[in-house]
Length: 256
Ligand SMILES: [Zn+2]
Image 1 (cartoon, rainbow, N blue to C red):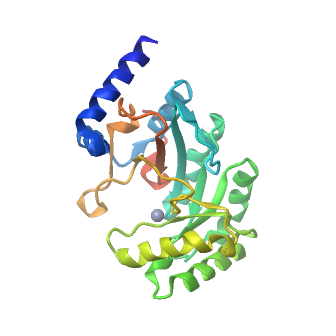
Image 2: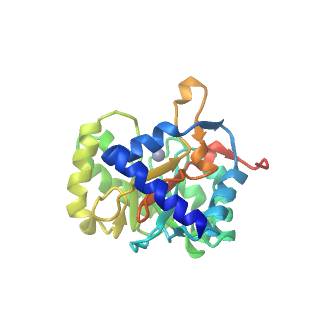
C-alpha cells in the first residue's frame, strides 16, 4: 500500500513537471542493460514480475479490453529471420508456461526463411492460443495494397489458414511516407482483407510505451536492450498500454 501511494505521488509530480514530454523523460532515463544475445531468462523474469504485480494486467494480445487503473501489457514476437524461427519455441514456451497469450508475426516473401517449412509448429502453437499473423512489408512495393493481398495469399498457401491480424515490418526510414499512407488506408479497409485486428491501426490500440529488443543497428555491433527489460520505468501512468516487442533471433537459452 505504501509503495503504491509513493508511486502515485512520484507519478503526479513527474507528470506535472514534464507534461506531454513525460514519455521522453522516461526514455532519457533508461540505461543500456546488455547486448545481443540476450538471455531468455530476462524475458521470463519480466513477464513473471509483471504477472505477480497488481499494478499490471497482462492481456491476451488480441484482446481489446483495457483496465483503467492498471498498466496494460501486451507482448508480441516479430519473426524476421531463420534464427527467429529457430528460437521461436523458446520464447513461446515461456509465454505458455506463464499463461500469457502472445502473438507471432511472419514474413512471407521467403527471403530469410521458408514459411511453409514451419507449418506444423505454427499450427501447434496456434492451437495453444498463440495468435499467428502476417508481418507485412507491403510498403516496399509501389502498390502496397496489391502486394498486401499477395502476402495474404502466400500466408494462406504456406500455413493453410487466413491471418486475422498483422503487424508491419520495420525498415527504418525506408519509404516511410508509403508506409504511413498504407497505415491510413488499411485502417479503413482491413475487414475487406479478412482482418480483425492490428496494432498498426490506431483505433484498435495505441501504445504509450514499448519495451523492445531491437535498439541500435546491426552494423554497429548488434542490438541492445535497456534496463526497462529488468524493471519497468517506475513512473508509467496507470491506464497506459505497454508493448513488449521481441525478435527471438536476439535471444538464447543461457540463464539470466
Ligand atoms: Zn520485422
